[in-house]
Amino acid sequence: MADKQKPFDTIEASDVALSHIPSEPGPAGDTQNHRHARPQIIYIVAIISLLVISLAFVMLQNQRRANDANENPGNPTAESAERANPTIDKGPFKQAQTAAQRRQAQDLLASILEKQKALESQEVALWAGADYLDAQSKATQGDERYGRGQFEAAQQQYQLSLEQLSDIEARFAPFISDTLADALKAINTAGNAEDITKARASLQLLLQIQADNEPAKKGLERLDQLPQVRELLATGDQNFTDGKLEEALNAYQKAIKLDPDHPQAIAGLEQTQTTIKSSQFQSALNKGFADLGQSNYAAASQAFKRALTIEPHSDVAAQALQQTQTELNQIHIKQLLASASSDEQQERWSLALDAYNKALTIDGSVVSASVGKIRSQTRAKLDADLTDIITEPLRLASPSVYQQARQLLSDAQGIQPGGSRLGEQVRQLEQALVLATTPQTITLTSDNATRVTILRVGKLGQFDAKTIELKPGKYVAEGIRQGYRDVRIKFIVDGKNDLSPIQITCREAI
Image 1 (spheres, rainbow, N blue to C red):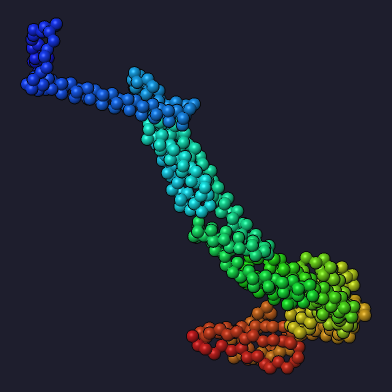
Image 2: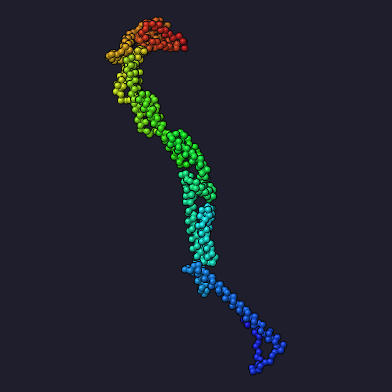
């Protein structure tokens, strides 16, 4: 190290006479003494300056520690402890704690910024300005502590700020809902001028906060229509009180057209409609009973049906309509029974049966109609069966039909009194039965070369002319000749004895 330092000057001994008092120095001696005194003064001044600077630094540090102690008197930070004990080093554990506190403070700060962004998008200054500024102030205090490395203290301030911001955020939806509800209440309940002014201001505030708030927009539109709506409501109320229901209805309808959501207009309209409906119902009911009293059943039924159209669940109208229908049915049944009786007397049994069926359709418990139906049904069937035989007597050629006709005749003869129509039918059937068993003479002609056969009767052979007897019926004569096409001739024997000769000849050669 000695070779790197400037060598000290060699101090040499000098001879000094301790007892000798030097004489006053001359000019040369004064100059030399002044040259030795100047460096000593410079050293003294420098030392004094360093002392002053050191003292000022110490005083500044003491003042800062005093300020920290005032701000957190019960919770001295790690930095204050370190300054008070400068000999303590920051080991790894202490550094890890500090880093963790810093990260936690940063996380809280990030959450604060996120909340702040969301609230500012909701125009928080318009509805929670004071609380929002207070929350910002707490965050600012946290920033100051963070800047001094007091991370734990910063966390506390950030946490307070975040909690306050969260509380403000939670109040947003209720604020919007309550503000809208209060404004609409003033509109709906006919508030005074001050209430209406407040309502308008509240709705405008909501639109400043939420430009797309449709209920607020609609509320302002309703406010614009409110004076005219109130005038119409007053007119409607007065007309209703005076019994001028149609005029009241018109006023309420106009009010609802201007403001479909106004509860007083809706209530007034519903009350008026109900009153009108009740009046119309009672009017229809009264008319129905009046018509019923005059046996005007069709008009009464129509009136009661109109009453039920107005009040579908009215028991009174339903019972009145049922009573009307019951009386009308009784009259109709009497008419049908009378008609059926008349048809029976004239032996129009199918018409009588139809009348009895209609009566039973109206009321199946009518005994006379049930008995009449059985009687008419039996006679109608007998009449139809007799008519079938009489109009087609050739059917009697069938043994089964003949036997059926004989039984039919017996049944008809057993009915007493039978009536003129039945008597005539019996006479005609008796005649038909006689004719059915009486053979008739017919003439057949041929060419004496054709072999003739009458189906179901027998073979007649070859002839020029032949006379035979056949009972009434339908027959087929068949002719066959070798080398010629066969022929078939259909003919009817009906007992009228005017049948021309029947020609049966094969003429078409093959």
